Image (cartoon, rainbow, N blue to C red; front, top):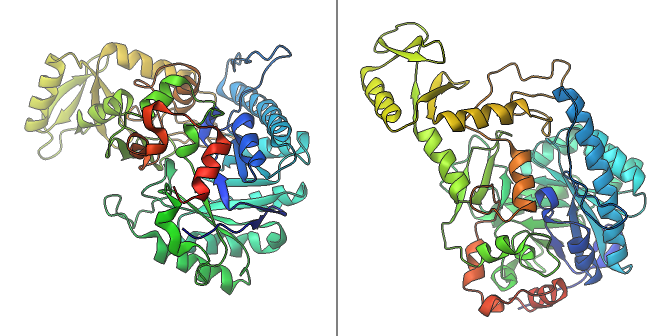
Length: 465
């Protein structure tokens, strides 16, 4: 294993090891501050971050607005307050070492407003902002205003080229690095394009070489590339270290930081990680963002899979083979199915899935009445946590809607991520994870349920293990 050389990241030489910023309250000030204190880069999540009262008690994120737009404004206020709070904790925990970054999703509701609010309120405490889940054209301009570095998350050289030509070239001095996130192996939301096969993972080396060539063509020879997704043992990445074709490279870890003493995830989540087997993480397209995402194939994901499998096409008028009448809704208004699909619909109804819900794709899904009521209530309770939501049809525009039907094949992402972060429910809530998370069970570092400190993990990573 080659020795890791310090790398200039966000204005300071640090270990080329980066904590991935993970969702709602899954990487916070405690975890990111510990990574920085160990001489690496810590990243807290700026997505609906937790805040606490003067006694250190969690402030529940409650919503009182009667409309989605009113609740959306409340969500922005919660997010700014929480982000500032976590930045201060991270700064204190870092002991002046390493670097502190914040991660946000460009497609999260109020992203620009939240970025301004946190960077203004925590001025000087955040050294870099990583941003993905969309094309974050304006993140460069916003971070430059606060003297902060920015780190776009991309999954191809083509994506970076579009960002550079449209916006980043004007703010190149603040470009701290580019995160290449493997769209097949990373946890959370994945950047698979429509031209890429989700079932055919590609070797990241050629893709990252193409990204480096693109960076060099823009004069960015010394700009680090941060490899994210699928990184576990650094010994497996030895050919990447000090490779002149790749230039300066750092490595980002998303799943391994979950199982540390400073990680904010609850013990139930940590125990669950130690039981995962290869294949237990499922690449799916249920997210209300419309992106692919990778999550543990638990009861939550299995219910979504079953819900979509109980799906058939319908027509509002008899057309061709769709001539079999079938009643839908409280008034029993007819839609028209094929003969085969009518038999399937009747079978599902007999099993108790008696409520048929229409989707934007002119299909019906069949659920129980209780599930239908819960789906409807979750859609009504929407607080606009995304810039556009397939599940509730909220959109961050003057109309407050995507203009399409709400899609019951998806789910309220805000509700379930808050629940998995703050309750012991790891079975019926969304549990994001990278595809290598099954290695917790076989990695001797975690034998007998050992949960290391962040410093112990960083030291372990430096050995190649």
